[in-house]
Image (cartoon, rainbow, N blue to C red):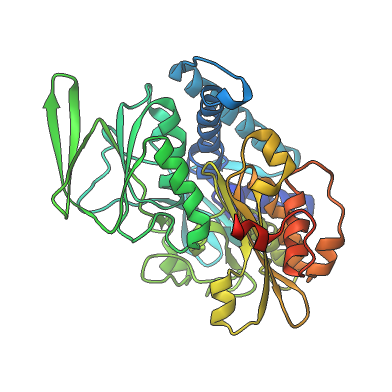
Amino acid sequence: MDRQVDAIIIGGGPGGYVSAIRLGQLGKKVVLVERAEIGGTCLNRGCIPTKALIHVGKVVREATHGERMGIKAEVSVDFHKTQAWNRFNVDKRRRGTEYLLKANGVELVRGEAAFESPSTVVVKPQGDRIKAQAIIIATGSRPSDLPSVKVDSRLILSSDDVFQLDEVPKEMVIVGGGAIGVEMATAFAPLGTKVTIVEIMDQILPGLSQDLIVPVIDALRKLGVEIHLKTKVVETKYLNSESGERVQLRLENGIQLDADRVLVAVGRKPNTDSLNLVKAGVNVDQKGFIRINDRLETSAISIFAVGDVTGLPYLAHRAMEQGLCAAEIAAGIRDTYPNPPMPSVVYSDPEIAFVGMSEAEASSKEVDILVGKFPFTASGRAQTMGRMDGFAKVIGDKEDGRIIGVQMVGPSVSELIGECSILIANCLTLEELASGVHPHPTLSEVLSEAAKLALGKPLHYEAQLEARR
């Protein structure tokens, strides 16, 4: 069937469904093509189910480590029910998203889209040819593996496969100590899994400041997580034992690690290989990621790309923001993508959250800075939670006082970092943050307290006194 619409969205993940909904709100005739589940990796195999597993692990840890608060508990986990609960939540959110698409007049077409020309896509297997004035590519990414550790989705898993497990692994080796690897260790170690992380770089969470990582390493080691740094896997073997089939990994330093499950968390690759981008005139880089300009437009006019398919950072909220802007640019009510400060979170326990420049980045750009670093040990709310690990660091430009970066590690800092993005986007100053009123006692007070420290006006913390203790 041949037909014409105003816009085609390829991919129903966070970037795609947001684009579709916004164009529908603007009165456009929109077709959204999705080959699998609405919600993409984030909803079905990433953000949502991962954080649910992490929360279960956190509940177990808090219930079994509350002696100082007078809590004594023995906890067991019915993992079948945990996975069923997780699937129920995912299914409910997926149905909600599908309802929103329908309510905004978006037509959902199931199948795989490929370009026939810069303005036409063909959807297989049905063979529909759809022509549009604007096309938004939002096909996302998928997990990578390694030549020495090939995913089989049975014993050697990708992050997509974890949610198909029907029991908690006794031993799990995680290859890759980035955000996904650390989050999976945070989820499974409290459930009783003996977790080992193998990371080729000289630290887990490569690229992050060392002071952010230290509290996370301490927490992982308290959970019994073993960490191997500056090494790689050189060989994988399948073993048969009385307890069943296992996997053996040989590291380049000669160490052998045996486990009943291996999780490969070494990065992601773009879902562009089946799109026939050559016929659309869309250019990609050497890894297959689509190149875009400040209008989120590809090398082909009126073809846009958003989210993971455009490369790092792989963040659902980035995809959503780009999807919203691409829709408005395609509709002619916005000119460019403003590239706002993009917060990032590692859902370890304690959590890590950051936005804007780090101290090292500011130094590389020769920016003279003021820094306030307020520890959670000085937070009344953190004390009441028994969670005093970590800190909030606010970085300001000394010349005009503008806040240029915030870095945090501690309890629930994922809930605080959004405010910091707004501070930076609106060029607010250390003085303005310091004078803002946060309710007491809350974790959010650490932000204004850190700003006061940067200005040399601390109220609830004295760094020199702390250093002498």
